Length: 515
Image (cartoon, rainbow, N blue to C red; front, side, top):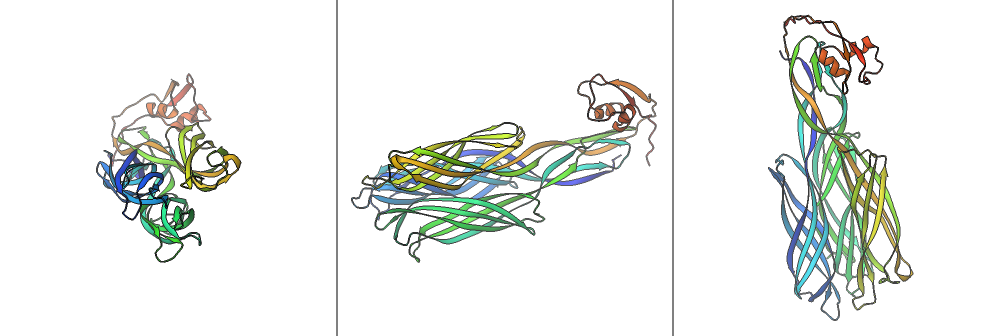
């Protein structure tokens, strides 16, 4: 006979796979006829756009491009510094056997290295190493037995706090802005460009998530009178993602992907650069639910037949931000007392050590310093490494804990002193997202079987063995935990000692009559 039970519906979002690969994107670039021959490259930069992402059976496919800017030394007696721009398209398949078409993928990409090889004065081979991390999630509707409507059945029913999925959604937003440069500058061409999406934040309104960020755009450019200058702007990004039943108490994950970008001198307004971006915003919202799940059961007067299942879910999900302030002095003799034009800061975690309730990050800041020099070119650059060692306390990170850390440069300031000494003042925000990946044993279905008439002793004496619990003992003798606690005067049902003698009241079994 099927036992009458109460069930609770859950929507679980499980991390199916996390994969990291380095994609090599390369191609040859021909120097346009309007530009002078190239002798060698001075500096490079790039912006990644992912314009298509597909989750298929057995794989995730991405299509995109790397928008590359090359500052080069020209074979020209007058204009020593010139700039080139090219797009390298790429397609990549991430082979993930567990992947299915209905699953969701979240991407994280960044350029690790751009290499240029001058083949001849009119042709360059360009190769970009793009570090790509893909996470595949599957949402699953499941039901768990939360209670049994039968007083003769004893249940082991621990309580868990788990994170269930409220919903997920995507939205596209567009940015069309004009970025000003110095009024005394007439822009000739863009030499270098970097775009970072920073200050990401979300606000929950009725059935919607307001996702906000800023596009920090740093551009180095050449003026018509052959000077090099820089400009930086922070442009707002706003998008609404529809998720039914989302509330302010939910924890939300968000990701921003650049799908397309255009940077070019403004043909309408002088002393400015036109910027156009398409950004896709993805959000997943979780609520914390406290649920009691039946993990084991037995009947004191009948036999039970039941099936068990194992489910994986998130638990104890939380987000945290910590600030690292780096105040270091570095020496670059080549700079002397000259002016710094620009410093590109890239923080890198080289080692992450977890120590119970703390995480230690060891890494470095990679500084690419572009400065004025006394050479015939007029500028040069230097790469400097600044190590850091940062420990975050009071964060629980056991073995089954997933921890994702994202670093963001919040502020930077570099002051040149005499002799090439540079005071480096950099603030790095560590954004940590942690959750426990847990497995739960649950009961799927329960059937009760009639037993023959049987008479047994009403009390036995049992000696506790190592590893015993009151639940195990009660189940073995078809007694109850409450009865054993009452008869033996036990104060804490979770504490019994090996070798201890217990009186076990046994139930007298009789034939069960079913209606």
